[in-house]
View 1 (spheres, rainbow, N blue to C red):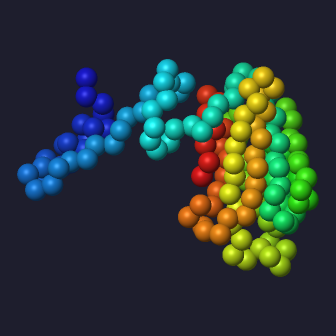
View 2 (view 1 turned 45 degrees about the vertical axis):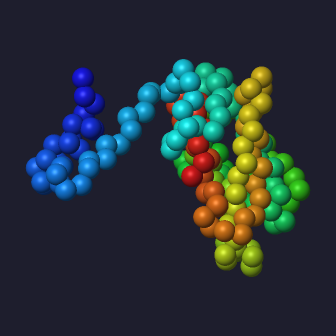
Length: 155
């Protein structure tokens, strides 16, 4: 059976007469996680946690400034983490979207981009997020996402 998304690509390419001029590029249809094997490519999780257990997130601040960490929903109030300190958020359930940012009232706010590095402690279902400055917005990270299957993504 041809996946629906590929069928639409071929159909539109044929209807527009593009099939003979330019090859159709069909998007890759990904498996529903958890996959049996990891395949390099876009939208692969960096790591996984067990979504059936409470999740703990440690935000390790190495930016040189204080940062705030909060969620895109109202599950918790944002916390402030001083430079060189770790802020811990316990008893979380996915899916979740965590944002770490320099408060805009800080004079260093303008032009400051952050980068996240993620490591998971599987036994304790803990995500360690090390936050550092980056000199390029191309390497900047804005959001850590844990999906309903426990997959961890950075955007």
